[in-house]
Image 1 (spheres, rainbow, N blue to C red):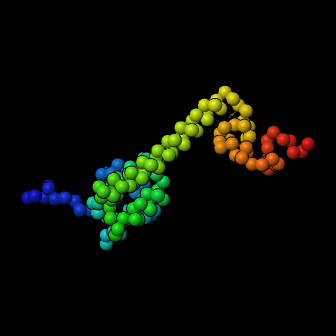
Image 2 (tube, rainbow, N blue to C red; image 1 turned 180 degrees about the horizontal axis):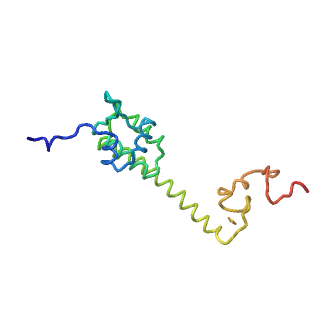
Length: 157
Ligand code: FES
């Protein structure tokens, strides 16, 4: 009869891995971290409800953007009654991820530009290299001893 069209309500971990393209080990890891959950069958096998697929997608996409798991978990924990992110939830969360991503891009762009200054320099000086001293922190301090360790000073002298 209509057996072919019956929708699977639950997945085993292998099926979830297959559907999501995420390795079983990663799914177990997510579960240990409290990002997804399952019920156990009488035979002690994990079963995941269908909406876990959406949660896994949310986790993967967020990770792709470079969001740390702890932050992803916090976002998921804020959803009422362990709800899987809806379209609206995702719209709101992805907006805040975007802000985060933009600031990381700016930071990386700054780093790249500074690294460009370093290429071919080789000074490796903690006081003058733009990467070692990005905000010119030493310059902000008053006169006097400014570093405990300075590789250019031979302390045994
Ligand atoms: S190594 Fe000289 S500026 Fe960075």
